[in-house]
Image (cartoon, rainbow, N blue to C red):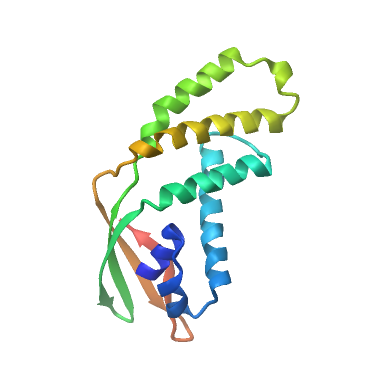
Length: 173
């Protein structure tokens, strides 16, 4: 669990590669895919459609910067039949939550002052809105902190071949 979390959030595949016998390239691909899921979620959350590759990469880079500040403590695994439950103590990063009011104000200002002639298509509008979100969150990164620690139970199951891995419903609170 620690190896998987280090790879997913910190981009450190060392322990994970040894445990699941994958290459550094495969671990890096999993890391990138996880970050892209977050980037896609951000766009969906703010109701922003397709953006240019350049703006999308800025979102990805922002998440990489934020995730480097991840705080989690993996506790000892507890056997549960053939499987294991692993408690992970997580301190959620607060920068996006704490940026909500600033983002709302910046978007409102954009809507009030933008000249529609400057945005000939949906992509240019989406890029502008996404840029506002990225710029606002990025400006708040120096003040990044953590919310109160929470406990999450990660389920690790044995598959038919006898290998252990995170279950499809691996995380519960």
